[in-house]
Image (cartoon, rainbow, N blue to C red; front, side, top):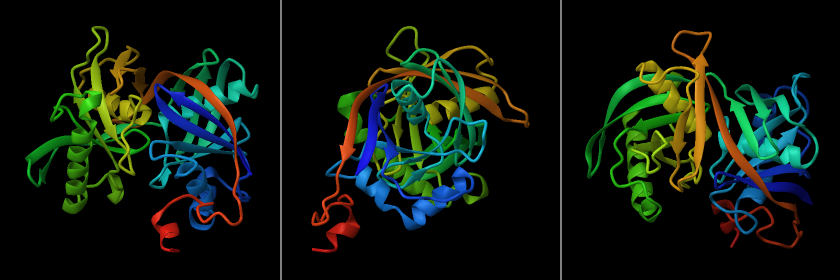
Length: 318
């Protein structure tokens, strides 16, 4: 039996696992993530994959923090695997913890696999996440995409590795997501095949298109393809962090000024940044709203062939 809280942040769902997970032992969240990945991946597949989940769902496993200053540790995962950090997910976790009465309005710290993240619970639904330090790694990187020619973009870290393309190939509208998904997959595959990576050979697993916003008071609109080929319904917290890092690197946006980022649904995040401690780094803050949508219990029947979710591994049994 797995007990969880479901929420959505600007349209993007999060499933926060409270009980029913494996004992991951001691150590940092990064160390326990590796144990989860190598020895207990059934938790991810059971909670995220069909028939209990969907490709768009992001999971967040709560666990005790290694750092006593943190209210909790959290490991993020999706249909593809494990995420370093998740901005919308962290907003959803904070709103879910508030729903449970575990935190009150104010500033709190949570430990992730890539460092400690600070969240401010402004109201039970509104949360500001001070993300991990972010930076642009490479500017105007050219890649040859089969069928489309040369595409240029920036490689940046915002808690995950992104390839950011300023000129979207088609209008960023909900009825064009199939085309956008196909184009984004092609670009990402071309990056992999060309050996274009993040720092120290890190896999670039997020692809982000931009266009002018539809709302008069917004600054940009985006489409984000996540690992596993699901598009982000929200404006993407780590993607907005990567965008702010590129804007700061080009001196196109001042620190401490609000940047309004629209997502593909028209929902929005407000981003700000301050200069980080290391050259070229910023510390971004992302504000958004999350709403709890359910308190659920997931059951696994021992005779159910899909008790650990539907995947290529389970289908090989038939």
